[in-house]
Length: 446
Image (tube, rainbow, N blue to C red; front, side, top):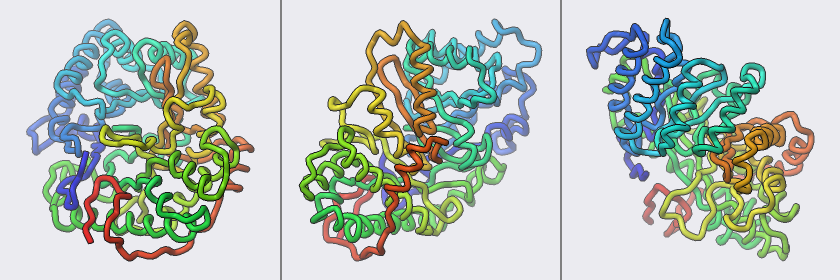
């Protein structure tokens, strides 16, 4: 998961698989697909030529939309057999939960076949997200998705219309650990800031916002720029990859991700610094401070240009943690084991989703009895969308993930919260400190 200071390939790559299936590849000496068997075969070949930081492709395509044109006269049973075989192949050859398939919002024979295969095989890989659109997705399909969640902890559910506003309709993928990125591009790099460490270096809440946070935000931008300069100017990846020359990816569709984690610990530390008794997730004053931090981060990222970015900007990402993390809570989540009831939990975390355009995730603990009531899972997801979790994603009968590229939903309470949380960012120092245990996925020396 560590890119090093001089990445020779982008972190995450999302090829235009539709173009590949239609045209084939001169580099791979492959003709375009004529039927479903061709399409599945072509994909299995290309997957092994798609780089990522994990050495396996993190995006396997919006498969039902990709494959439906090639179904032609096949019956549902014939489609099911092929999809199940393909699904098993993916797990055995790409055994990595970062590999991600998207489906929806339309109800197609391939959509149903994927849901059936995933529920039956119960594999870890590939990961799966259903793109939901209330104007397109029928209720019985969404209910089937909820039943799958109760059966095998997948798929996650993403709010399609909201994502469309960020990356253009249908031109994005939900990949890896719930990153939202443009198709025919991807994520160029990810640098992650430990907000707990930033808070510990602050004397007060005011000091955090006026001096310390801007300082480390600027350092993180400097790191992003340094990595991207090497990737674009010295690695020669974009000059030499057949993915570029054949139009499957474009250098200007890659997004540098400005990552953060340990917001919960940062809020609690800052509350203690200022004599506030509240705790993140359980107290309105602490929660408002958390929203203010997310707003400040989002404003800094929106106002700060990068040399190589999405419309000359990085995108904010609440990173969902790695195995080496200790004493920290992923992203903007509530600390594990100390969560309130699911509804209160959703209401506490939903306001953050407006700020994290490159993805944010939350886990909600539910009673096991929900497995007998998938309608409740479906309603909880829809309620999460209305509350502000614009890419609300359910992952099991006992957990819910909310991964979002964000724009506020039409809910007055969250708009009001955003206005209250908004805070201007003051310019900070760009001088490097001697030791910086604030960043992940980077080595800085004095």
